Image (cartoon, rainbow, N blue to C red):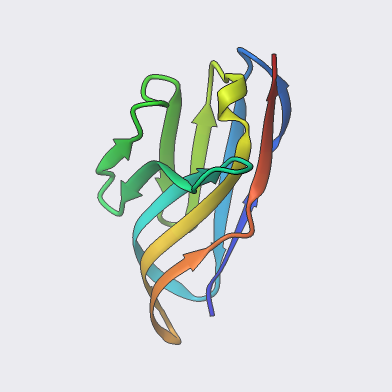
Length: 121
């Protein structure tokens, strides 16, 4: 069983910063790729950023230069530093992990429950 728990969301003014964390629990040996997605009301879920186990990183064009994704493999934790936040960044942010090897076996993917980020203008 793998659980992903996000934290760090909240309310911030435009131009401000937030740091999201995603912790994977369970006896985990490795996670191939982790990522952040977001979904605003009435919109489809979109990919924000991904990071592989060897730190290959990709960002959505809308967040390049403002957001920074990172991970600590020893802690099975991923982070998203969000700077210069805009009202358009308001969404529920979800953590995702894929290719998870644990003591209980292999899991293709897992999702967190989401954390709300609200940016006021």
